[in-house]
Amino acid sequence: MNFELTEDHIMMRKMVRDFAEAEAAPGTEERDEKEEFPMELWKKCGELGLAGVTFPEEYDGVGADYISYAITVEELSRVDAALGVTISAHSSLCANPIYMFGTEEQKKKYLPPLATGEKMGAFGLTEAMAGSDASGTRTTAVRDGDEYVINGTKLFITNAYYADTYVITAQMDKSKGNRGIAAFILEKGTPGFSFGKKEKKMGIRASATYELVFENVRIPAENLLGQEGQGFKIAMTTLDYGRIGIASQALGIAQGAYEQALKYAKERVQFGKPISELQVIQFKLADMALAIEAARLLVYQAAFIASEHKVPVSKYAAMAKVFAAETANKVATQAVQVLGGYGYTRDYPVERMMRDAKITEIYEGTSEIQRVVIAANILKD
Amino acid sequence: MNIVVTVKQTFDTEAKIVLDGKGSIDGSGVNLVINPYDEFAIEEALKLKEKFGGDVTVVSVGGERVTEAIRTALAMGCDKAVRIDDPALANADEWAVAEILAKAVSKLPCDIILSGRIAVDDGSSQVAVRLADALGVPSVSSILKLDIEGDAATVTREIDGGTELIEVKLPAVFTAQKGLNEPRLPSMKGIMGAKKKEIAVLSLADVGVGAGDVTAKMGVPKFSLPSPRKGGKVIPGEAPDAARELAKLLREEAKVI
Image 1: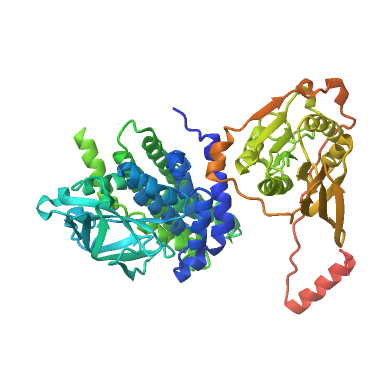
Image 2 (image 1 turned 90 degrees about the vertical axis):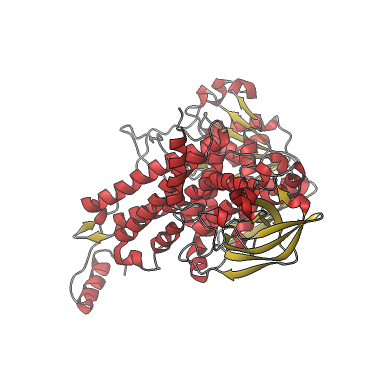
């Protein structure tokens, strides 16, 4: 048992934190206000290797472990959760299924530009009738000679419009339910593939969320990811790993909000002394610190398991995700409370952090679905 | 073009300095970083390497913990490193460090030596200049711009109230001032690759210095902290009266107007 981060992890954390504070933090509130996608920051993330942390060097990735990835998303999200999810959705939901389920040709073609950040990735699973229940997938794929023809609409797609490469799911045989679903790699600019409305979100407003619209989109048969009928399994495995990214994002939001509350509590004077000397505030800060440490241990444990491959990651990623997401919400809400009236204004970042935190309990499996996953795992044993 | 960068590990600029009972600095638990001015030197070396090719070697004097600073330099893109570590170095002064560096550097192929203009801890600004002297090469301090052509350098350096343009033949020592460049962050790949790069750990004997040859000429018996700042004074009352009182105090008590 060793709870120490390696020298590399420590250096990575410092690098990502230095980058996030110098380059991201000054514009976070403005991007949130204007719902402005962090395109310039994305490019800089690519140059620093943050777009391909876990992928092997042979595909131009960094070849680092999942703890490095968790630290990356955590540190970005500590100052800008929208930037954090941009990296997370790109890496975990697009590059990773290609890495895990792609043929060698697909990996050689798609992974290097994704890993270097030259291209951005997105993942299209959710639909109007297919949220927590993927069997409601209405997007269809029909084999036609050497091509598949895709029709349908995907909803709430992170990085959409800006992303170049999309992994999407479509139903090929409705009678088979989940087993009729297939996954495909789709490139932006393919005729018939367009973007619908941009969502106006409560939080992570700088992150891009669009509909994907497929109207007789013809893609070459070689773009099938895995086998026909394997799409549901690919999507669920993708989400198992993706949850480590969202758990890290939630952890970063919690850490950021806690630091804001701690700093403010030491400076704000009421009743003749800093409010950090009031026990009621001290207990709030102690509870925040306690929850964050517990969340961090769960997140890094899930990341460790994802790298070691000795046991399935599903249960641990679900535990990390639900706990970190609930921690982010509790901590951000309490941080607003510590800052009082100021915390409720947009002059202080905790207001944004409280809005940003909420999504971590919803996307890549709601907190309720995480408990379903955990329960299914523990009852199976 | 081969470049040597001398690097010192210093306290984080935000570190709180604590003294023990004997007036020595208690460094335990303090976050250590590369001296920020040395980062400018590293960045300049890497830019020259990108332009002209060659190797950048980091040279540092100090114990095991200095490895952290060296690894960061390697992660930024330096090629290899030399760390000189010896029990006899415990009380080394600037002269001794410069003599040791000179011995070590003279064994390396090198056209340019870069360093920070000052270390943010002791702030003596001596080592790089003494190193140039020991090597018998010219040195230019506090540089803001460095252009190399063949074996000649055109350098802009900061002087009080302006700049000075200097031409100098290589090899030479340059010390970096803030403004020379914007140091890069190490990339993820750089960090992963840093541990594969060689850090040669040399003793005084390895660099050809006898322990008795570098006995410090200078000692530091004691450090002391500045006296704590006194609390401010609040002048009560209505603004016109308070302003009058303030003016009076500034003239009679603070004697600033």
